[in-house]
Length: 207
Image 1 (tube, helix red, strand yellow):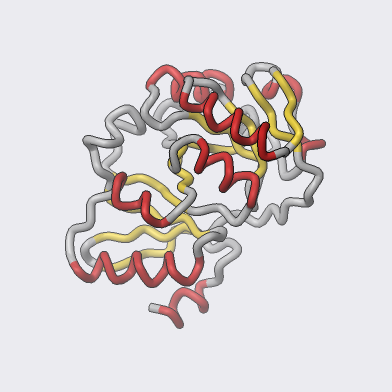
Image 2 (cartoon, one colour):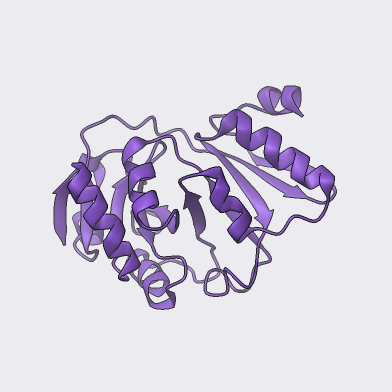
């Protein structure tokens, strides 16, 4: 494991290393996360092993720009498209996760037993630069061993976990630590699965 400060050079290095199959721990706007190449089966497997995570529990995707969304999802109709556009324009970057029907061809290595995928754009400069340098899309989850406390700052990272990964990007910035709101979107409309930073009132007012 190598700890990197959050210089542009180091973030660029970490992004390129994700493309090489490495596992990176990095800050987001909600928690410290662990990320890997979403197309790399072995890298994804390592995340599950390092976290001691149930293999049936899916990872999500973080993207750096809305343009990358079309590569990984399948939109069924105009209603679904309209809801996605409204929510993403209003709340991204930010702590809103959308559960969408996935493009199985593009995401064949990630959560193969699921037809949907969770996606969001984080509101964190380091995370956005890292993801962009990794190609714009990464697979991720929280940087902790399953069922242990979720780290919201660098000081809360567990040595037993981070000693397994390849790189850790250090940030002294305070992370808000409020979970993202989760909305599932389908051809029939939307359903709020978890209320977090974005409130139910904000969503209903918009939609």
